[in-house]
Image (cartoon, rainbow, N blue to C red):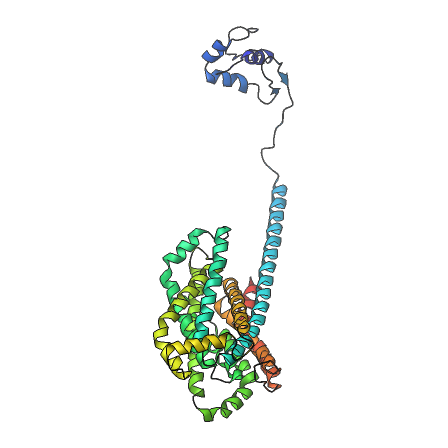
Length: 436
């Protein structure tokens, strides 16, 4: 038990401990005697000195030391001061966090708007060249999505940024991602086909239908309720978009009425955004209703993989129709002509323009998912609406491969109405934060 027990007798003798477990005062106990002594008596001998003694090891004298006593209770004033300091510290920390969150939302929104404008311009330039081969272009772009997102996800998993539990969670929920991919595939294929057959200025107006579809999907699937002020704000935003682009749209559409099919393509293009709106709301449900908070590249990779699978399953139905529109005698000739056009047979801009569209679209999608994660689905749509008048201004510039539109001061008026609608939509949230 103990190797040297002389210090116990010296300790007890120096402090006149009556409960010395050993019989004689000046006796140095042997190890055998110490081992035979009950532990309770040894503990009593040590404890009886209180905090007045300082103990050294065997053979050293035991000297009394200073006694330190702590107050039994703190004064009430000190407690109140400490509590007040903690509250101030918490308030400052919460303010810094709120500032960081608001700045993050602001920067992400600005990047989303800029990328949205660039994405629409490059998208229209691609369709101008690949007019007859939109199905081939949609298949190629989706395949690039799968390769890029899967590579980034693999790197993040290897670096242990993304845990394997999230990958297993995505695999277990493959039905949800299959539904998201199928919805995005429908919008992608229908949108590319109809957009190549519509006036360029008409596209920014028609794709604002996603605002209405997302509001309906959020109401049905997420149980989200919108106030009258928010509904008025959405309508005012849509009115601002129509004011800024409407006159040019009506003129260009009227000129193309003789060719036929303009309004049918416009209806199909507008209706196709119902599918992507449903996919956006489902992604929001993945982020906010699941307990794992999946990584952005988890959602992108599995959604793109399922989207590519859905487009591939559509090929037996879409390819014969596409070959007939491209006046190709067979499906093989269609893919051969599409590949040669993509390689730059008709334009020196290809294939770099298609690759640029893939790169811009990937960054745009990542930014959109980031904005969706820190905000809501409808907030990201309202942010995209800001890019509509800006895109119109770009179409008014002499951009290669695009038909230059005439500038109108109605664009500035529409931009003012649009900003007022955005303010009106966010007014209930501003009042709620002010009350808090």
